[in-house]
Length: 202
Image (cartoon, rainbow, N blue to C red; front, side, top):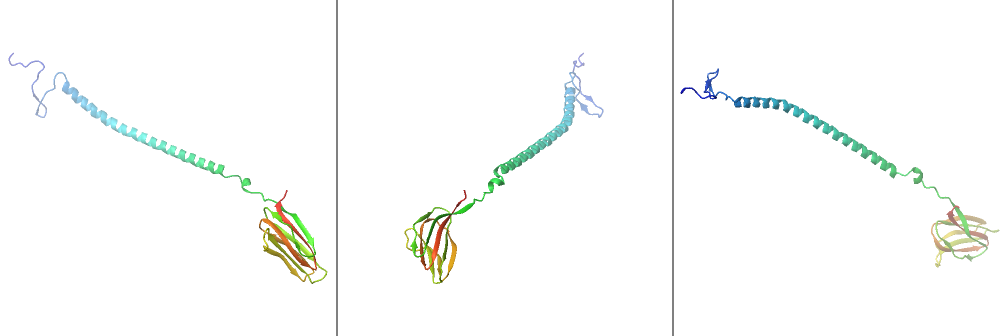
């Protein structure tokens, strides 16, 4: 009895290599740990490649989704810009302004045989012109026309200055507005003078 070891306790034993090792306990704790460690290593070897493949798939899918969103946003932006250009560009019909038709309207006229200073007349807008002509039975004639601004004794310009002619005539254009009057200086001739203003045709 004295040399018998208690139940559940075993001494050291030699393995196949001749080395002395601790035997496993009866409750299997050492064996369980070894089995669990092997199982964990096996599972990790199996799970890690699967995890890498899954992560790669998710990354590719995410890149593809972002690319589709970017392309869609670019397409939408391009469409909006095209629509804005289309909306901001008015039709050609509205850009082409119709040419305003005008006509010359007689507002004053005089006739005589000698010197004459006319009454004042007003040109509010646009151009105006002086239409004149004269005739004489002899060639010893003088005919002049000058126009003045109201209140001035100095002529703005001479629009006719003819001498020693049997007849003549012309149209002189003036490109300024305001209040004016004319002065005719004539000798040995009959003359006619009129003022015409450019106005929009009705």
